[in-house]
Image (cartoon, rainbow, N blue to C red; front, side):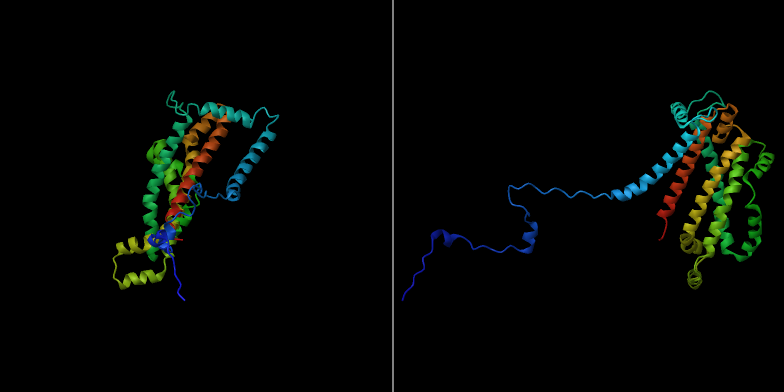
Length: 300
């Protein structure tokens, strides 16, 4: 029996289908021609976490304002929140006005206070951080200086102000001196504690390698002590901003503390409350900045 197989001319010239490779399958579009392109996947937002971060502070602030409003409904001496808000709008409409040496806007007064804090705090850091390294590194100096630190650290900040006025004969350097002497102790103590908590194995390796004291400080001590040092810096900034307000109330001149006292002499309670909020906000921003800086250099 003879069987014949007939082939069409088209089928003989066509190439047989080839199975796609893995690379071709990945490169090929997943959708058929003519179908719309798939939308990009949107980033999911955890709204619960957002509300947990935003809602509690807002509720706390609202609760404080509500209690304030209830307590001042029938008050004729203490301003209500609405009266304070109206006064703040007028005050911040021109915060940098100048009508004389003792009549300047709250913006200028805040900047003058920040300038004093920066100078006094900078001097305290330049002296306190190296002193903390020395105290933590050498046991003899630690035993010699520790009683003095324990004696002087609890002294009230304002107790140092008359000493500054006696020595410098001027209010501005006396205020800077008060900031310096009060903000130096947290940096000294925290830096010294950080040096003392460096593992002894690190120092033993430095002895084996015969490293110089400078290399021990820069390569071993400084990276290990940095978190402690930044904690001391953060505490010192809070102390410095707290002290400058009280010092300026007593020395006069220009500054947020003097501005508060001057408004009290004018019986302008609304401006005093506004100044309290300004002082708190500036202190909060300084602390938050240093906390972010500490996290940036943290080794955790």
